[in-house]
Length: 96
Image (cartoon, one colour):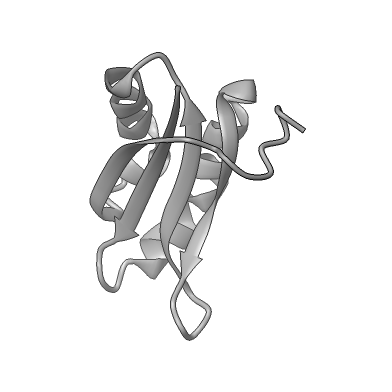
């Protein structure tokens, strides 16, 4: 099943994000095929201020464990993390 992690950074936490970004990117790369897509949300000024991560997992508890292991989460970057089941209905590369 696919899950979308919708992560919102704490206000004023851009430096925390920048300091932990290399470890976060390596963490995501380590997920292999379980990771379906990821990228930052941007403010109107173009600064990163959150994340969207698409993960394939057996259930929500598995995704919660992955989310907790993310270097961004360990650094206390996020104000909130919303985990939602997600259906990739259009332009899913696995169904094209």
